[in-house]
Length: 502
Image 1: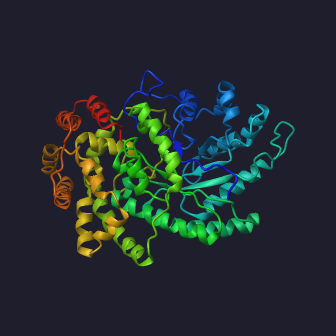
Image 2: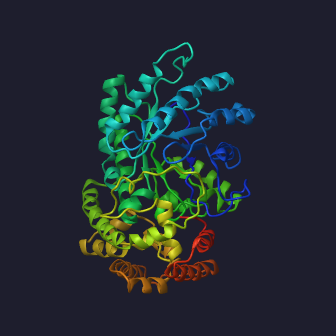
């Protein structure tokens, strides 16, 4: 057993909420608001971990002083680093300027001194998330760099060895990397042992859910994660210490399908996940009573779920199938990207962002196109009435049938039909029909819809009053888009109805 609590829920600063947070009077959350948001996540909602993002947004570097100074009694009873956890997402040095990493390092190193000054548990911060991890060397380099910085001594800089061994949480963000992440980790553990003369007591790998879907589509992403979870389970037995996977899931099915109303289904779909993100839409677009119940459920039940075992023969079939389904999705996205980007320009800001360098921001993307961030991408397509869950998926299902592995797909993507049914309720067939007359890409999506309807044995479309209103608004948005008019009002209205910006 390890001598620390592993959180089941991790609040994040992803700006995907449509409505106004219950503790504010406007939807926008400034950098100065986020320390208070951290406290509310802990004390009011019952979330046990908060991810503080140094990667893609402006940062309040005095977060610890704010938390301890304004809520001392709470953190005296619920110490950071013991009962509640603040975890930084660092910028990856290979894609972002080193000055942001240096500032984060100094903040981490000095946090132990801050906690000690307040007479609280230290070190309060000892784990960080490394985004876009692709090699074991990246993980180790970060640890060694921090150790060397921490070893610096000066009369005005006394860290007293309070945080000497920073723990790294690698975030795997591409389908191919997620599938191979077990190999990356095994090599990392061997390198770690060589340098530190021991193995870590536990490990927390982190699989993205939004960005791989943005890059590769929903089916390849889910299958990649299932393969990784099975592999992590086997690797933990081999290494002799526990592995606690994290997933970066959000409310809409395309980005993970976790909302206060779907936590039971989510926990069943992603058995083996030990920590899930709780993004802004989950926290602020639903009734607070439902939010708190859902978080309590996850805290209690996620630790009890064990990953499915994927046999090697099944794994190899899925690995061969994944690139085929990626191609359907990517080829279509390349053809429709201009429309998606046009709509995404009208997405409202919810937080203070710096210029992002995401997977589509390194002057590469799907083919020759670049795309917006996952939230804007998802929100743009939903607002248009063409949910991204449907893109490439019909053809992927047809290919699974042809290969004789449809049952295998359904075995490991347990709620595939449910996700398609849920997202299909926001489909506007009239808009898609008009779009299909303008581009081969939209014609391919129309074909996907036809195959999905045959697969489900039912027609896709709205069922509830809210869904019908959403479809009507998407038609208005489409007509305004053709005229070159602003569509921000329709984007916000549709987002409120589906309870997520994107």
